[in-house]
Image 1 (spheres, helix red, strand yellow):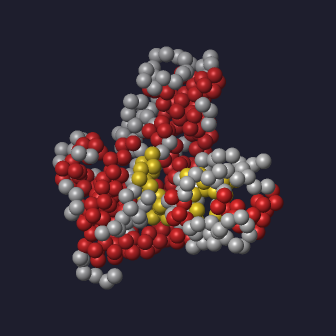
Image 2 (cartoon, rainbow, N blue to C red; image 1 turned 60 degrees about the horizontal axis):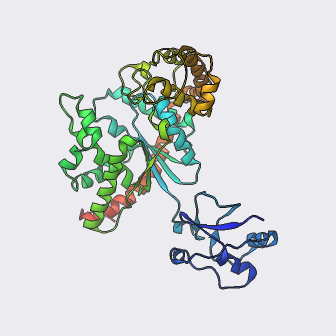
Image 3 (tube, rainbow, N blue to C red; image 1 turned 60 degrees about the vertical axis):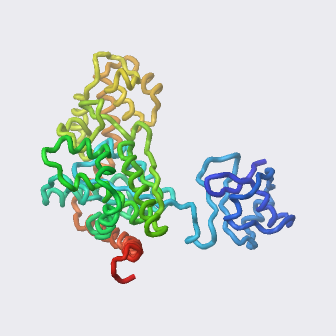
Length: 419
C-alpha cells in the first residue's frame, strides 16, 4: 500500500487533516497558516477508493497538491484557490552581460540550469544586463550586436520567452532609478570590500566609478522584481548578500517593502569550469586568449583544435585529481556534464588512451552536444528583428512590474510623484 503525504512549504506533513473530508471523522482542514503550529500526527494510509474520492471531492476549501509514494523530497506546496495567495512559488532573477560570446562554462554552469528552473513552474526573469557591461569601455556598434547575439544564445540553449521574461536591462529605466536610491543607503567602505571590485580594478590604471558602484545596480536589478532567489556562482555570493542587506536597510528606514533575496548556487563544479589554457583559473569571456574557452558558436574544427591545445600535464593516464591534475580533471568535469558519465565510468572508458587521445574523444562529444545549439543560434542571428521584438516584449512585461515597485519606493522615500 502506498502512503500519501500532504506537502506544505518545505516540510512534509501526513494526511490526518485531509482524511476528515473522506472519512467524515473530523472537522475540515485548518487554514494554511495553522500548519506551522501543528503537532506531529500519525501517518494515515488511504485505500484506492479513498484516493479516487479525493480527486472528485468538491468539499475542500483549499486546493491540495499531493505526492504519491514514500517520503519524497519534491518541492512542496499548499496553494490557496487564488494564485495570488501562493507562498511557495519562487521569483528567480538572473542576469548575464552581453559582452563576449556565451561559452561552454556559461552554458554548463549556468544557462542549462536556468532552463531547468524555467521548467519548474517558478516566476523566472532573465535579463541581458547591458548597463553592467559599460562599466568598462565598449564599442557601441559591437555592444549592439553582442546584445542581440547573447539573446540568440540564450534562446538557442532553451530559454523560452513564453515561460520566462527575457528582456534587456537598459529598456527598463527603473533599474537605474532604484539603484540611485539604494546607492544613497550604502557606503564606500561596504563596496570597496567586494572581491569583484578588487579583482577588476587591479587591471585598470584609472578605475571607472561604474566599476565601483555596479553591485548597487545589481541589487536594484534583483529587488525591483522582488526576487526570492538569484542563481549565482560562488564569486557572486557577496553581491547577493549586499542586495539582501540593502533590502533590510530600506525596510528598516522606510517600512517593509522588499524581500531579502537568497543565493541559489548552481551546479557544483560545472558552475566553475576552468580555462583550457590556465586550468587554475575560471573559464571566462574576458580572458584575452580565445583558446581558453569554447564558444557555443565555434565551428567543429575550432572546438577540436581548442581541446587539442588544452593544457594538461606529463602523465598520460586519465583520472580525476583536482589538486594535482587540474587540467585533466577539468576535462573530465566537462565530459561528465556533456555525456552524463561519472568519473569512474570516464576513467574506465579511457583505459589505454593517452591524455592527447582523450582530448580528441572529448572534443567529438562536445561537438555533438553543441551541434543543435549552434545550428539554432546561427538561424536566430539571421533574424535580428525577431530578437529585438522578443527583447521589447519582455521589457514591456518587466516595466509593468518595475513601475509598480518604483511607485511604492518613491512614495516611501518622499519623491513627489503620481502613485
